[in-house]
Amino acid sequence: MAKRMVKLTFPKNLIKEPLTFQMAKKFDVLPNIRRAKVTEDVGEIVLELEGKEESIDKGVGYLEKKGVIVEPIVGDIIE
Image (tube, rainbow, N blue to C red; front, side, top):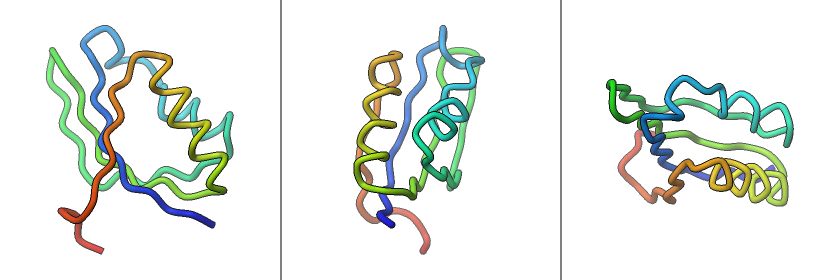
C-alpha cells in the first residue's frame, strides 16, 4: 500500500460537495484528514491518502478534474 500527503483546496462553489468521500469510494482510497480549515470562500484539507499507487493517482486526477487544487506535501505533518 502506498501513502501520499496532499493539500486540497476547494473553491467556494465546491465547498459543500462530498468530493473527498466520492473519490475514496470510487477509487478505493483511504483518506485520513490531518488538518482542515473551511470558510465561506475556500476549503482547505490536508489528507494522507492510502491505497494502491494507481488508485491514488486516479483519485487525485478525479479531484483535479472536478476543480480541486491538489498539491503534494512533504514534511509539515506530525507522523
